[in-house]
Amino acid sequence: MLAAAESMVGSYVWGIYDILVLPPSFPFGGMENPCLTFLTPTLLAGDRSLANVVAHEIAHSWTGNLVTNRNWEHFWLNEGFTTFLERKIKGKMMGEEHRQFSAIEGLESLTDEVNRRGLSDPLTKLVPDLSGLDPDDAFGSVPYEKGHSLLFYLEQLVGGAEKFNPCLKAWIDKYKYQTADSQDFKGFFEEYFHKSVDAKVLASIDWKAWFDSPGMPPVELKYDDTLTKACTALKDKWCSTSDKDCSCFTGKDVVDFSAAQKINFLAQLLHEEPFCVEKLHAIDRAYDFSGSLNAEIKFRWLRLCIRGKWEDMIPQAVAFAVEYQRMKFCRPIFRDLYAWNRSKDLAVEAYKLHKDTMAYVTATQLAKDLNLA
Image 1 (cartoon, rainbow, N blue to C red):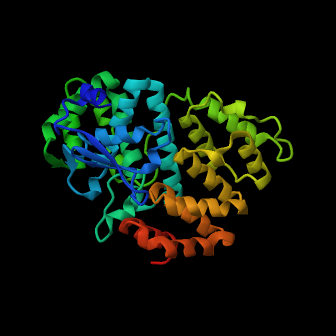
Image 2: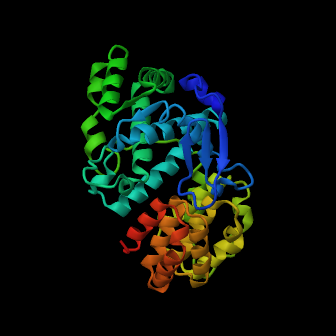
């Protein structure tokens, strides 16, 4: 991964690169300290299927640690760039279709957050005004995925990776060991391409809409959906099958699925109307998601079960959320439990019982999610 990154953005300047897996209370997927990345144990799936987070933290060695956002309003310069580079590393190692498959997953994550916050919520702006706000309240997928979307859009606009990769490296070379803001990037981009890209093309970029408009990106992006087609077909088959007759589904349906495709299948189901408990039972009989050691799969499966009002799965969901306190996982599960009258009090009780074992940011944000703050 380091070699793939270096081939695109230049030499790794930090000397050594080590990884330390922290206890389950670690609130993030990773933390990009120079020389030493901290990681959540939820990445230990036994098959390296969640190594994309390692690629993300490696990418931070350039975008975040070498070039840093000037303040939290320009956080996308850290996380959007890093997500973009992470996926380019994946594309270089596994093929472009895998890079774009990850981008589709990311766009689904962004859609979920925008829908949850609201299309007009100012914290869904790429460059939000954080005056008087705790930056942690703005933390979510927006700087990662909306930022990635802008960079992917710009890459396509100027003629693809062959044209854009040198620009990315030049940006890092110019601003290394410095901070930068969004206007710095806009000015740099326009100066870099002013001779090689038609002026009308550059003028077509609506920077204000990208930076200042809430909601989804102002341009609808098209990604290679080769790897999502099988996931979508299986999702559609489940949605169209009667609750009373799911015998046509077996483990063979997903035998050729990668872990990422199983995650995508479940993510697509989360965008549908909740399944009844009988159909959820059928899914688990066929695919044994309850027994999965992959935390990304288990997380989405538990959310499906809670949304489908499967009472027997409440203890599993609570146990998962209090054991793995990575905010990406525990906050949505706690919110889902709190939204259902049957499990609302249990969610509050579990939070109060375990909040002293949580990182400060986790406890603080969960208190807001559960209307305790």
